Amino acid sequence: MVSPCYCAALRKAARRLSASYDEALEPLGINIAQFALLRTVARNERISLSELGRAAGLDRSTIGRNVRVLERRHLMRTSRGDDDKREAVIALTGEGHDLLAAAIPAWEQCQQAVEGRFGEEGIALLRVMLNAIESGGSLPDIRKTA
Image 1 (tube, one colour):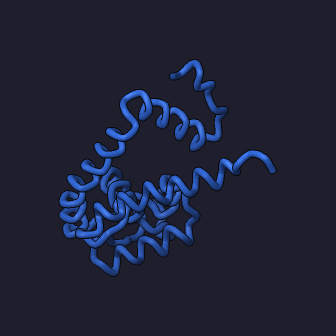
Image 2 (cartoon, one colour):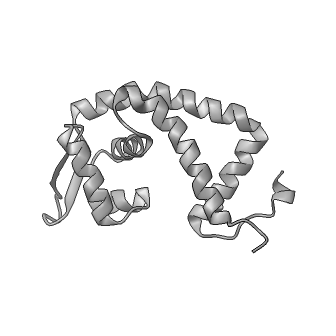
């Protein structure tokens, strides 16, 4: 094999980037994955477990375990759906809203540090590439984007 594995390189880079966000959020007692879930639930206020899983790109059992961790910390609560009583619906508690508000400045500082490292053009290119990967669409020719 001559070329490096792009998937392995992307996973390694993602872990390194995640670690910097985790470090920024650590004083608040959460990691970037938990912050992302809190933020997604706050944006939707009442979101089904299935919808949250789709938004996070995680299967239902994984998202359920992650939500239970945040429920035990009294940051989220689960109730039954209005239309479908079988569906679990997630919302933030007051403590969850408070923690998210306290975490946003640390997250924003980390975002700015990443933007500073990559520069405006690099961040624009990163967004294009990540959106293409996430959507499953074809990757753009970066020679035309840069």
